[in-house]
Image (tube, rainbow, N blue to C red):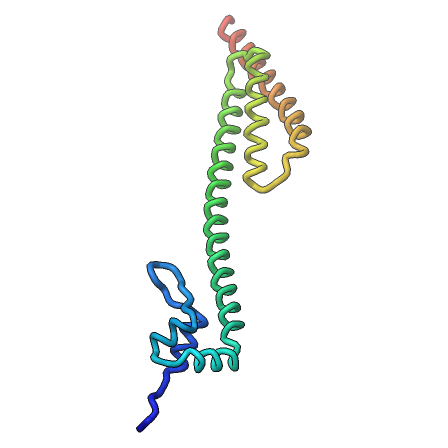
Length: 169
C-alpha cells in the first residue's frame, strides 16, 4: 500500500501565515491542521518543532502587525498633512484680510487696531504651527507686526487727510 503524500508546504504555510477568514487573519492550531490534512497531530508537532514553525509564525505575525501599523501611520500622516495645509491656507487668508482692513483709507479706532493685531497674532501662530514651527518666539514677531500695523494705519490716515484736503481746495 502506497503512502499518502502530505502537502507539508501547505501545512506549514497555513500554520506560519494563517488564513484569512472574514477579513481577519486566523492562525490554526496543530490540532486543526491535523484534522484538515488527515495527518496525526504528533507528526505535525515533530515537523513543526524540527523546522521552528512557532518562531516563523511569531516573526510573520510581527511583520504583518508592523506593516499594518506603517499603513496606519502613513494614512494618518497624509490626513495630518492635509489638515496642516488647510490650517495654513486659512491662516494665510486671515492675514490677508487683516492686511486689507489695515490698508483701508478710513481712520481706525484703537479698539479696532487692537482687535486686528490680536487676530493677526492668532493667524500667525496657526500658520507657524501648521508649518511645524515653534510659536515660542511668536510674541516677538507679533510685537513687530503690531508696530507695522500701526504704521500702516498712520499712512492710511495720512492718505485720507491728504485726499480730504485736496477735495476741500
